[in-house]
Image (cartoon, rainbow, N blue to C red; front, side, top):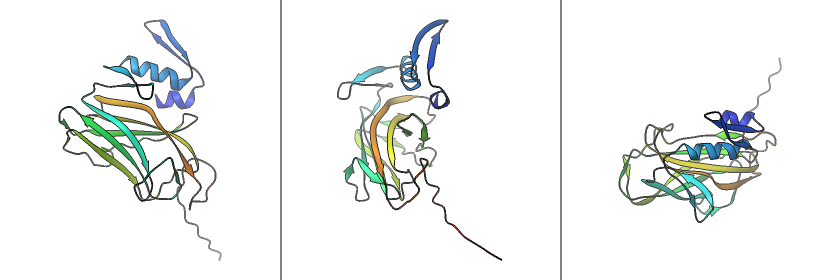
Amino acid sequence: MASVKNICDRVAWFEHGELKEIGEPRDVIESYTGAVTVDRHTDEATDVVRWGTGEALIERVELLDADDRPVERVPTGAPAAMRFHYRTEQPVERPVVCVSIDTIQGVQVTGPTMRDSDFVPDKIDGEGYIDMRWDRLHLLPGTYDLSVSLRDYTLMHIYDFRPYIMRFDVDRGIIREQTGVVSLDPTWDHHQP
């Protein structure tokens, strides 16, 4: 799906030879993915479609600055975090938070998961939050969209998927690069014989 979103200008969704939808990749992919999942509903607070089986829900997401204060923008190169507030009706074993950060043009910049980082709690139960932290945020200045899902350890069972739950800005900071979307944080050397 990420390749379709990044490569295509328009997308057509066919089901058993019948045209279901045609349009912008992001919109058609969201419609398709929502249609093939177990439970789909509209979040009343945001009017955004979300889906999943509902045993665990992502209630809200916060962008945090270096002092863990909620903010809407952070400087590139600074410490930052995303806080994912969850709620469960029953214990959920080995849950995995999966994140997608995209440019506003729909290009996926990164897609980290807790499982990739070898951090998976034994279980979650009730209310709480999970933080994803950066010592230095390497996103270059710009506006980004965040999508998040809460899944089982296999990543196949989706408890809750919140597409485009938050838009946030990255401002100029200690990293001086100006083009692209991420900094590789290079160092430079010069040698002359």
